[in-house]
Length: 257
Image (cartoon, rainbow, N blue to C red; front, side, top):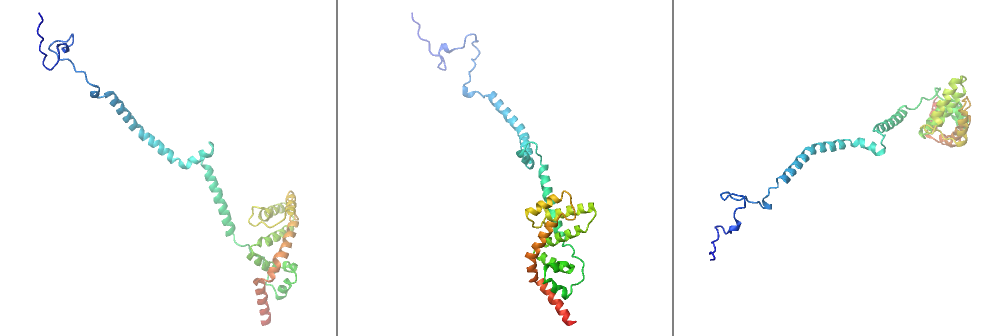
């Protein structure tokens, strides 16, 4: 005979869904957790480790970046070449400062003293108008003309001419060589602020003569500068206030006497 179907067990589970084989009837079957219920401990642990590592690395990284940032002034050297150091900037600044100081010292030097001479007479001043040679023959005439050249910023022409005259008076070889060198550096060198205007032919002559300096090393240059002063500056000097005031002053003194 067929047995009547057994009523379903409480909870709606069939008999086949009972305890697994090998598990006692009094022990509840373990529940298999769903995927959504897994706490993902390993992943969280890994994430925590990464965060901690990042936190530990951040100060060092910031310090490194800060150090690199502080190296800004030095980084320029590595942009130029691997062997360059920032001392090159210091050297360049020192050279520029030395050039500015030299220029300032030249300006602070003041105007060299004029030649010592007695006050010119009215006859001498009138003779200056007759020829440039008569003007240049007397110390008083050279001083007055030099004062005028100073107003035209060409006093170096007179200073060069006078230096050449002094050189001609020397006889000692070592003194001649030293004075010739100084004249070249002061008035011939293109680097000198007191360079006089000479053509290329005369400069070539000077360069050859400087191999063995003598009293006549600058004769051609001296003649060229003398001619330049005669043709260019002398006519303006005769019409200048310096000459006219001196002439009027001496004329008035002569009338009073």
